[in-house]
Length: 239
Image (cartoon, rainbow, N blue to C red):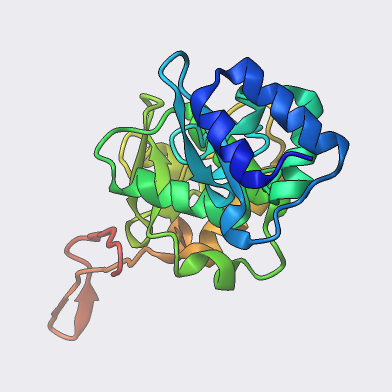
């Protein structure tokens, strides 16, 4: 069997076809590196050679296609027949984890650009599917901003303490053009799914709009008879 140092040498000097042949030889023998430091993967760069990267910087699949800038996605580089070997031998993770999704959301939080519907939808569908039973513990401290949308359908990320869940239809219509309501998918998303998503938002830090109102009535007392000069209803978003 080819030794690992010889594999390193050959992969650094041959093209991707030759590299695949070498990997196929290793896969045939179920080879695994003896040292953790040897768990590196050759990432080719066309005709310009390539570079070695740690297996922790790679994933086998990126189902939502959100991690092309964060990880090397091996299904885009190597033949499918070699992917099980890379997972077994070099311990490459199959897919991004919940922590990885939170990290990419934090990257979006720091960005000044708006968020696309597709990215937002994929992120929160993953959260709905994979979040454990204690979302407060897993997300409340790590997510600072939540998605918000207006009548224009644009999606922005704003601080969770400034956002509300539209649990009152009248107030929702009244403020639908303002950037205060959390986002949710408009199509193919049933009431039970909306309720689950709102519950996650609530546990992260958003508040119900109906519970965040303060009504104040200004009145005037004259000659022992209470007369209401005016009823001033002030909608006050508590901090």
